[in-house]
Length: 218
Ligand SMILES: [Fe+2]
Image (cartoon, rainbow, N blue to C red):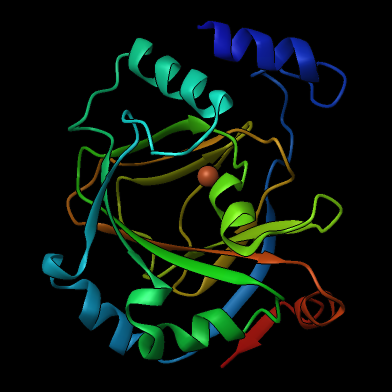
């Protein structure tokens, strides 16, 4: 435990049960994207196309709330090695990322792909969208969401854990969404790299409409 988690629980005790024994549904299945994944997976097969991200280290320009979280991640026992992931942003390869930026019908949109080797974690955290809000100058009254998309069929030892739920056995293109403030974590305790994507965007009438059928194409 840490001050970070204790104060989060204290501030949010009326909005979630905070009981690990409850069988609650803490993620929503949003649907599945059907597209040609090959150009992106080819790009992701070469580690030279990625930048390293380390969750135990401070990101320049991010606020005090994130500093508390990073302090906690270090206190919990994580280190630079086991919180490393490889990332590519859509702005680096706009053509390859275009389908992923367009399919959801978001207003402002940012896509990031993630490669986690065995032994690597994204520790327990909530999404605050600090970087996204700053980059796109999003006003406080505009709603933001994040789609988490799985780029390959599920492999043994790969996990996505959100609130009291564990997600596994996903298929390529499957998308899930979390309610704001639901803490989550991912890890690769398996044998092959884990390839995922986040699509963060401002919610529009179009994005709400496109989600209704749970099938996305591009
Ligand atoms: Fe997250």
